[in-house]
Length: 214
Image 1 (cartoon, helix red, strand yellow):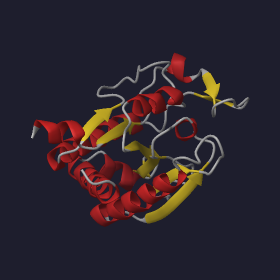
Image 2: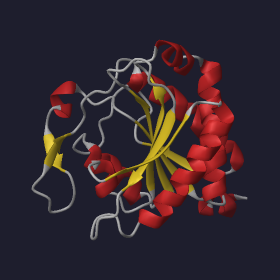
Image 3: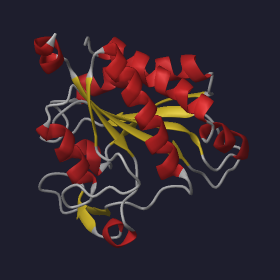
């Protein structure tokens, strides 16, 4: 049993945001060797950091019950690993040789009627993401499908992104789930409910299990 626990796949959960504003305003290269820079953390939508953490903790409980090992980039309100940016988030998961980096967020829009869940995955970029592209896309498909099935959220599908630092610095399969819109009043209320957070977490857990055996 001890050997099984030590050899079980490790899932890295990355609850979005929670970076102190003074650090979040700093910039970092979007990818290895890139001259293009982005701020480390724009802060997200109001209330997003708390929702992301609550969902991550529930997801951790379900994954542990399934026999996975789990590491979280933050377990409290503040993200403080390494230099405090998205490079550090990727490095946290890289150094643990995670089977998957699952980044947990909630969306925002100036259009308050926007609602639903989507899953982001890395665009193909030689030297940055070519080693994780196929596996990340497969994980995105499976997690999105399972999350929509568990929550009955509007399915906004998959979104390819080449501008996310946390993807471009990752050496392990990485996806980012936008669990819903904090700017939609009805969806915001749902996302702040523990019962709905458990539904999201069950979707994540089922998607992870479909992606990688324990």
